[in-house]
Image (cartoon, rainbow, N blue to C red):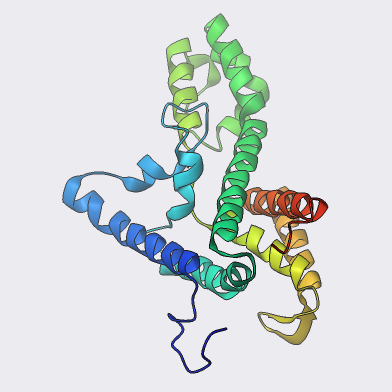
Length: 262
């Protein structure tokens, strides 16, 4: 047990503390390194679509340690959540088991995000391949509206196979995901499962809500926002749900094996 009079840092178990430090250092690096050394760490370590030439397998892991360098709120909210809920899980599970859970849910969120990108781009890329094969932009008539969400161009008839190939290359390189949110949502799922009756508060709703309901509402909200796809919403909602899904599967497996609490 921790001394009630000790500092918040001393109350923080080692994995959670080091995760916060690593994320904070990389956030600062993402601000400094591009100007000083001309290296875009977000582009290098953030996760790209697997069909893009920017993608590397290691990004499924590294993306979760980066945050938007232009937004302090992004890293603060994620790391506060990791500290608030993660330290409870680490104290109960131990450092190795908690770290394994954190990494599995983070990578799981990345896999789900990749699947979502595949669904989003499937029709477009196949239409573009067909148009390249016949060397005619007119073959893109069925997906013209979708293409104009990403590109500015004149008439379809003016597009050659080379133009379309360039557009496809750019399209596949557009999406990038960074942040610890997937792992954090896995942590939230675990907290709600293991401490279902702990009272929590939603922002602007001064009514205590059991953790299991709190997590359920979060999941429903993420599903709604992910399906709705509101204009200007760049949050990877399905990645958040992916973190929850992999967290659920791992906890279910541990529970079935009788290893949930040890």
